[in-house]
Image (cartoon, rainbow, N blue to C red):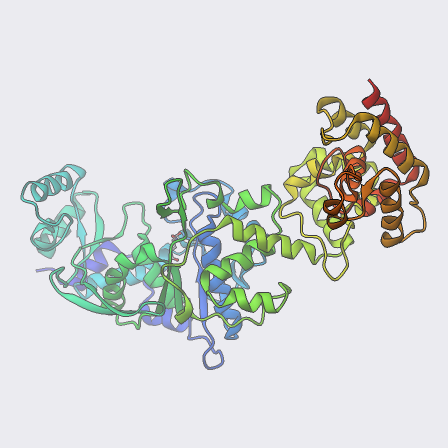
Length: 558
Ligand code: GLU
């Protein structure tokens, strides 16, 4: 009878490398005590998911705060699902968010001694491990056709038995090696399956850095480890790669917890120590009915990181926001640091909340406002230009009319102790600054009637505007001098200097100074709310203000 070694030799005659050779080729890393080796292992099957960015962020953080290594491995064994170009896009997006790996597949090159870092280029390595498993009787060729698999499943369903290819149902587990060799020599197609020795009726203890130790049913499935295309499945590739790339901590989404018993059994069968595992909570959102559900690629625009880039969120705000989902103590910490830099924050697995991973766009917007408010006028102008050149042609052409003028607009109430926090994404900038441009100002006023307070007679408004035009100082004044002049003009037209005075003598006054400021604001900015009026006027300048006032007077007289 053919031995297991002979069967292994028959299937993989070309494989002469041994596991020992691989141990020597990929020696243990020499890193300082406590340094963690983490990896981000995306499949090139589409866009970068927000949940994947979350995982990559934690991988990078853990590696950097322990003086370890963060590398990228491309998991492309599912060749049918690969989307051309997505591997480069993934790397590009990681770099935009500052989550770049220092080792592994980096797009145009590979860096590091533990490669290749692209799974489809590692077929020879997997074969060594599979040959070994066959030779020790822990793996076997399976010749099951699709029809046979369907039959097994139908039978299990009919008898309400747990589905799968395991135990007595693992039909080809029971062939002897001579029978296997015969079928192989006849050219019958096959895959290689792992021969599990577990039972789903038994529980094993597994450890997770976030959840601690817990019990889970043992694996008993004879999973496919080697497909007919010569590549391994995810489970097998994960075990081999994380062993030989010397990963210390596998950080991945919690959807992989269910597969942990398979991975633990594979590590054991190969005689290797398993790495630590941390399964991050899946990011959820509240739907319209206030029910929690997973962020969905299909339903939620915020599931793809490209959405945040296209809408012009500063990448840092999404990253900081994701860190609040990771560790609840981060929010207080970053507040205390005034949103400046999170490098010194100490991430901890024990503080990952399993319930708290709810995506809250309101909080992200808030973070974003804080971060944008901190930028200098040059920084924000550069970021907006970069955004506009990629995503917003209209905004770009507005900026290009006069970049300095645009920078002055962006500088309104910036670079001061309490900067204004009105933008959270660049997508909104175009509409909000249109009124600063004369042709756009006219377009707006032609299309939308100016919303003056109907309480005040047109004649009163016209009179006040004329007076403001003639008497309000604009050049070389500070805000308080300007405001005193505004108050004086208001008073002249029977508007009280404040609410208290107005309420005390409502017969005497038509309104308050704020009403007069609103008349001016609407006339110059077309809206009831705008950035600080004094600064808007400074940016627009006396000559154009006069023109706008004349224009509005004319408009009101029609
Ligand atoms: N390629 C797997 C995925 O994209 C990676 C899972 C892991 O990190 O091990 O989900």
